[in-house]
Length: 235
Ligand SMILES: Nc1nc2c(ncn2[C@@H]2O[C@H](COP(=O)(O)OP(=O)(O)OP(=O)(O)O)[C@@H](O)[C@H]2O)c(=O)[nH]1
Image 1 (cartoon, rainbow, N blue to C red):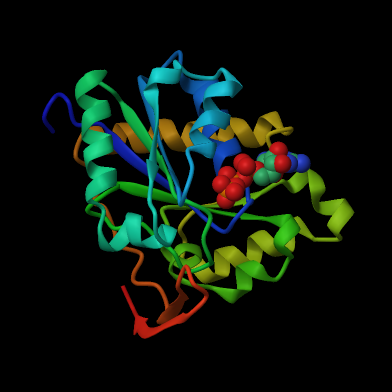
Image 2 (cartoon, rainbow, N blue to C red; image 1 turned 120 degrees about the horizontal axis):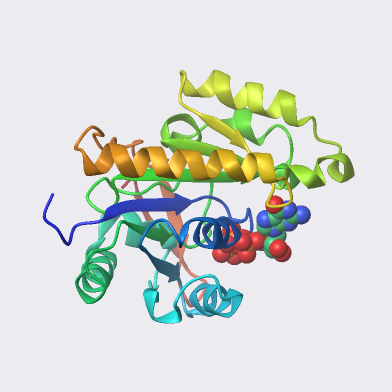
């Protein structure tokens, strides 16, 4: 890889499952060891970037926002140009970076990154979304490089059996890893760190081949005026 090319790691998943928090955890835990940068995606704001900057986990200049202006999955899959430019700018301005984390805007269960944008991707679910979400499948759940079942500390409050949820996820993933995570559980955070370290090494030695988890399900959109955009797109 050219010296300025980092490991580009995507983080996707439904709204509020803890994508920004997971990125904050990675920065807090690994910023001394790896040279990191972050790109956030929001539809209309730079809210996630501001949140991460205020968390104080990384030099704020290394956290940049892309305002997608459209459905989040478009910016990570159909037209990745604004994100690619943001990643390349960051890589150039802070060369050399080891990892650039790209956070997708919160979307539905079927949104995934194009391998043209990221080398590997994490898909984040949380226990608060319900124990049966992992069984519902979809490209991110089935084929992301890592599936995170997040906020396990909340499981007793929402009556979710974490072991069961993890087993369901494993069954859907054909041996790909599943990580039960809580930022309050240091052992699970250690496993996350280990995975990021391992993937960073694999990518830098050329031993990892980016895999496309596959397109999202056909769907339609509601326009700004409330009208339903009737053409169904399949990405
Ligand atoms: N209890 C608990 N709460 C968590 C954990 N991780 C994240 N949260 C909380 O979950 C909420 C959503 O977290 P975010 O990191 O903003 O989620 P997100 O997926 O980035 O959200 P969007 O960008 O809006 O899609 C926040 O209130 C976090 O504090 C966790 O491990 N345990």
